[in-house]
Image (cartoon, rainbow, N blue to C red):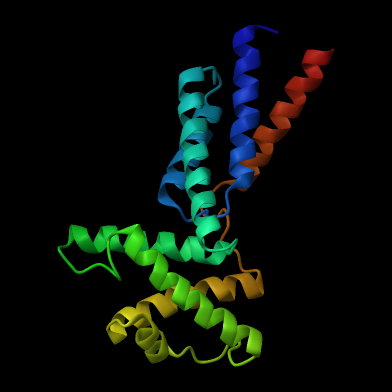
Length: 197
């Protein structure tokens, strides 16, 4: 097996690992990288090492950023995703010259979401809230000291994450061709077998 072929297979293994490690499949950068990877793999001559390296680097950056937020939110993946959804909405709002939710700065968003996390966790743990119960949007607004519409928006995003966790309704890999990923993993295994023979 040539050095190029070995490097290609290692990069594909590493990319598949990074894909499996990700827990926020709604991330737009993540989705774009996955699509690039599939397009590259659909090409019969997928030896573009530079493109594979860029995809791997991008996926690693996305996962590292997720892990940094995971530490901030005390291993709560829901709030990593909530944080990122707020940042995504803020980018859209700012493009339309509208006021961002909470702030456009991470260091302002984090303490607010930590208060909201504490509120939701305490209410859920005490049995005062269930996944299907009415979410106290006004209470969220009061906790964070923001307008009611901001509290509603944050509570809505948080509620969606709790529901997805509770019902295991993961929109993981929504829009991502998982059967294609399985084919790629199978192709990797097949090349390993062929290289042994």
